Figure 1: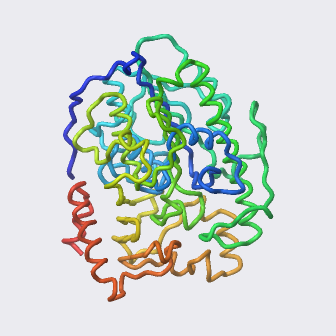
Figure 2 (figure 1 turned 30 degrees about the vertical axis):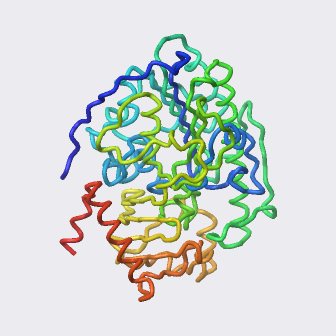
Length: 456
């Protein structure tokens, strides 16, 4: 199997800005958080902290995960490489046991080598530790849903004396499902309990409107509001420790909401996610950037901020030059790659998405589309099974489970991705063009699944 040659960090860390301040980074990652954010247009959710961060920085309206699965997406964020390139093909924990390649030049590895104090608090969820090394693992009293305690630990880390800049990764667990819902039953000290009524939920088009769906959405929204308070407390810790003017602050989610039709799919509900960046150097605040950006762009963004040259196998581009732009040229295409979620869920697929079209290549399309255990066990999907529903949101149940080899959607005419145009002669040229561009990207990223073109 193809392996990576170790990259060489050519540039040393930039010790400070023109004012001599360090170039610190706080990267906050939500867990299974979709576009349920006030500043992204959700009229029900209460997310004042994320909204405030967006008003101070840049909100990317068209940000896309490169894969809709927890560990693979976090590996993309922390490596700037697609999941088929970095080796984190599926979940890291328990029996799933997927690992990134040992020689991946990850973001924490490069920053640590460049002299940064690097720390993680909360959810880690990638392997192995030598590929994603941190100098400190901060204690997380009560677990990574106890967001107030996490902020206090982060405050101590950021407030520590020293000349070295810091990189802090904050891994929240909200609003991921737990065994009995969304972990809303415990009382979390320092956090207001914000509840929602099922009847007030606006059911998204990729879900069907049933009582159990509305109930689960209300629970999900409560968990998001707890997450938002954690973001607010983290922003306060940054300010209280005197680092608001020297810290690049980022909020992003790893993948879409934990329901069939979103998480684990390359459809937009699974990959179109919030991304908010605040740079102390930007002169414009409250920017809404329409560029199509990918989570492979986060590592090169942070490396540029730190003054560290990105390795050759980092496939993204820095977002720093476009933070104050609204519609920069040359940002009109993103790619996606899925292989596994759980170890039993093999379903390799590749995707190219432009502003108008999405093309998905299902490399093992004869398989039924697999279900993550938490999605299968949800009240939402169990309701589908108990009623024997033929329809699920805008799709039929059969269309969701049985995918063709190729899918093409006109996102302007069909934003919910329900009318597959891949076999339509009127779109043959579009299919041919996107198919060729996807193949070229697979070659560029040295996709091991290229072998399927020769063997099948």
